[in-house]
Length: 154
Ligand code: HEC
Ligand code: HEC
Image (cartoon, rainbow, N blue to C red; front, side, top):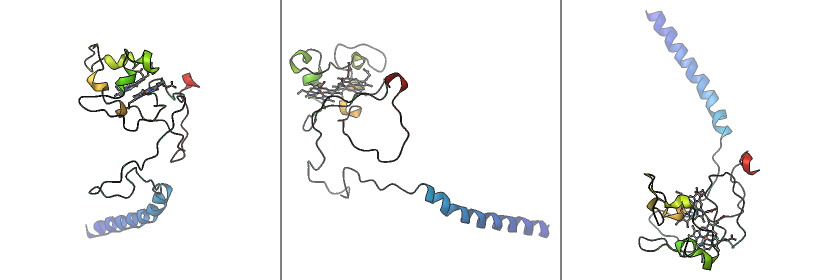
């Protein structure tokens, strides 16, 4: 009995030493990427001064990378408010506004509720446009990656 316990103990100790040796190299492989969020180093308790983010210029829309992608916004959206009572985006993108504004009509998919009912105005689940659509930017990739545009769009 005692001999068995000893063997088990030394095996366990051996494993521990082995793992301790392997750990540092495993960590080295994915060193953390140093990213800075839009908040910078401001603590959660403090607000940043407003408008420190980079404004995008209005440009022609970039191509989509996959068919189901929410198209990127090709214009600045600074001060375009989306509140409970008012949606600035719909001021130009609503179907009855697009003739005058020259904006793309909101997709017909945006009138369907999540239960599949077709509404005659924007569906609540599509109301907060910037939940899915973001302003386009020519930012370089933050980490190396092998992403390729969907084959159907190449
Ligand atoms: C003052 C009018 C106006 C407002 C307000 C506006 N847009 Fe636009 N938007 C346009 C116009 C015009 C275009 C077309 C630009 C082009 O095709 O070059 C456009 C294009 C887009 C596109 C690209 C569509 C495509 O086919 O690629 C998206 C997405 C978009 N807007 C989203 C939004 C969102 C989200 C908001 C609110 C945060 C918004 N827009 C507010 C006028 C507006
Ligand atoms: C839940 C995600 C989501 C929300 C919220 C959303 N969209 Fe979209 N939008 C998409 C996707 C995905 C597409 C592309 C596929 C499609 O047409 O449904 C799209 C397509 C579009 C297009 C292009 C239509 C075309 O014919 O090419 C416009 C313009 C647009 N959205 C505007 C808006 C506006 C304005 C709002 C807010 C009122 C909004 N979207 C809210 C996901 C969203």
